Amino acid sequence: MGATTVRVDLTQEQDYRFAIDFGGGLPPLRGDEPPPLGAGQGPSPMQLLCAAVGNCLSDSLLFALRKFKQRPDPLRCRVEAEVGRNPEGRLRVLQLQATLQLGVPAAGLEHLDRVLASFEAYCTVTQSVGQGIPVAVRVLDTDGRVLKG
Image (cartoon, rainbow, N blue to C red; front, side):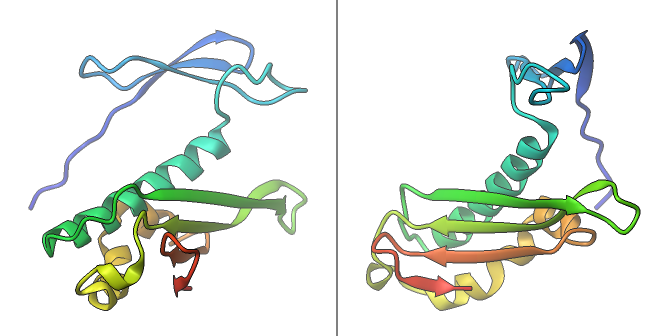
């Protein structure tokens, strides 16, 4: 399979606020740094990174479960970024922690062990980000029971 290109265009509106155009008729999104740099009028780049990782993991888990005709809906996901300074004193995302929660009890899902063992490997964004930033993944069922991580 050949490589594809994904394009996103950003246009500065004012200071650190940018209009983010995804093309294809999708509505633009506004990104902005929090104060004191920006005005916090949109998600920050770190929040967008967390959203991309969480969305990709959620999609991957949902796809894997649906392959077995399972209904885990509604899924929820929280991604937290630990931000700190690197050896040069510059702010960096040191690690990400993703917690996915199924919308149903685990006991009602077939092939769950097989899905939990493999779904992360198919998450394009997380696997790519994970080459530079450690990403820890936990999966819970609707009752809060830890299934992975």
